[in-house]
Image 1 (cartoon, rainbow, N blue to C red):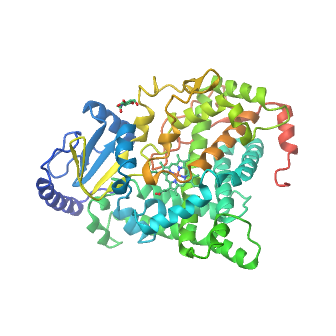
Image 2 (image 1 turned 60 degrees about the vertical axis):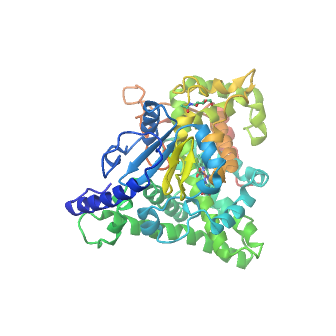
Image 3 (image 1 turned 120 degrees about the vertical axis):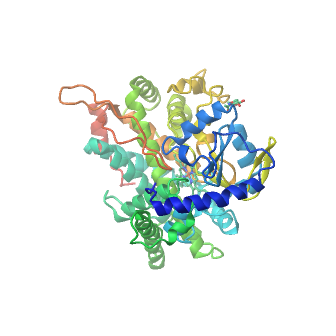
Length: 509
Ligand code: HEM
Ligand SMILES: *[C@@H]1O[C@H](CO)[C@@H](O)[C@H](O)[C@H]1NC(C)=O
C-alpha cells in the first residue's frame, strides 16, 4: 500500500463521507455479520495485509457465520467461508455472481482497457472466449496434451539431475515451456527464454495489482489523475511497467505463431486449431491464448514448488509413495498418466498437497452488481465476493485435523475414497468462472509429481556442520501463493535411475 500522505488522507476522508451517506440509505435489511466497523472507513484499518484467508476464517468463527461482511471505506466485501455458501451463490446464482470487480490499479492503470479474460466483466465477449478456451481444454480435448506433459516431466527430471539446486527455476521453466508449446506451438529450451521471462514478470505485475485492498488508488480512484512526478506515486510507474509487460506477453508469441502459420511451419496448437475456424475473430484467439498461458504458468509452478516443500517435511509420505510406484512401474520405466488408477496413494498425496497448500487461497474474487438476499442477509449490489477456498479446505468436519498433512484421509481399502470431499472441487473456484484449465492442470501436476517421486529423493539441504536447514515458513503473499524460497537437496534414488535418466532421449520421439 502506498504511504498515505496528508493529501491522500484528505481525499480518503472526503470519500468516506460520501460513502457513509450512501450506505445509510441502503441499510434497511441487515448485512451479514463481520468485525466491528468504524464510521467512514469501515474495516479499512483492520483489513489484513497478509494471510487474509486465515483471518477471514477466524472472523467467521468469531461471528459464528460462514458468510461475513467487510467494508473498506465504502467498498463492500462479502467473504464466503463455506462450500455450501459458495455453491449457493457462485454456482446456483451464477447469473449474477459471475462478474469481476473493476479495480482502478488493475483495470485502469495496468490493463488500461485491454481485455484480459480472467479478470474481465461477465458478458458476451467473455462468453465467446470462454467457449473457445473450453474447446481446447475440455476433459476430452486435454488428452492431446498427455504426450507433451510427459515430455515436460522427463525434461524436469534431467534438469533436476544436472543442477538440483536450481529446482525452482526448472519447475518454472518446464511449466512455462509446456504452456507455450500447447498454446502457441513454440519450443523453448533455454531457461532465459525471452517469452518466458516476459510472461513471468507480466503475471507477477498482474497478480499483485489484482489483489483487492492493496492499493489506495482502488479506494480513491481519483488518485489516478495525480501526475507521475508527484511524491509517493510509485504505483503509477509500477502500473506503466506492468502495462508494457502485459502487452508484450500477449502480442509477441501470438505474432510468432501467426507468422509461422502463414509460412506453413506452425505446429498444431491452441492458436492454429482456433484459426482453422474462420468465424472466430483473431483478437479473441489472441486473448484466449494469452489467458491459457498467463493463467496456467504461475499457478502450476507454485503448486509444484509447494509439493517439493511439503515432501521435505514428510519423508515418510515420500517413501510410501515411492514404494507404491516401485510396486506398479517396472524397473527401468517411469510412470505415465495411464498409471493414475493403479497409484491411488500417489493421487492422494497430490490431492492432499492441493488441499493443504492451496496456492490460490481466496481464488479470484467475483463481483455482484445487483442487490441480493441470501438467508435473510442483504448482499449489497457492488460487492466484491470472495470465496475463502482456504477455509473450505480446512473445514474440520470434511477434513478432520485439517492442519495435519495426511494423504491417508483420502484412502479407503487401498482406493481413493469418493466419500471424502474432493479438494479439486474447491481449489479451482466456483460457478461459471471456475478454472477452465483445471483438467490440464490436474494431468500436468499428476505426471510431474509422480515422475519426481519415482526418480529422486527430496530432503532438507544440510549446512556446513551437516545439520538439516529448516525451510522458512511463509508465503509469497499474492494472488498465487508459492512458499517463500527454500533450499532442498535433490538426488537420484539410485545409480540405476540416474543412468536411465542420462541416457533417455526425450526429444527424439
Ligand atoms: C494448480 C493449478 C491451477 C489452479 C489452482 C487454478 C486456480 C484457478 C482459480 C481459483 C481460478 C478462479 C476461479 C473463480 O473465479 O472462481 C482460475 C481461473 C482461471 N484459470 Fe486456473 N488454476 C490452475 C491452473 C490453470 C491452468 C493450467 C490454466 C490454463 C491452461 C488456467 C487458466 C485459467 C483461466 C483462463 C482462468 C479465468 C477464468 C475466468 O475468469 O472465466 N488455470 N484458476
Ligand atoms: C463444514 O462442512 C460441513 C459439512 O460439509 C458443513 O455442514 C459445515 O457448515 C461446514 N462448516 C463451516 C464452518 O463452514
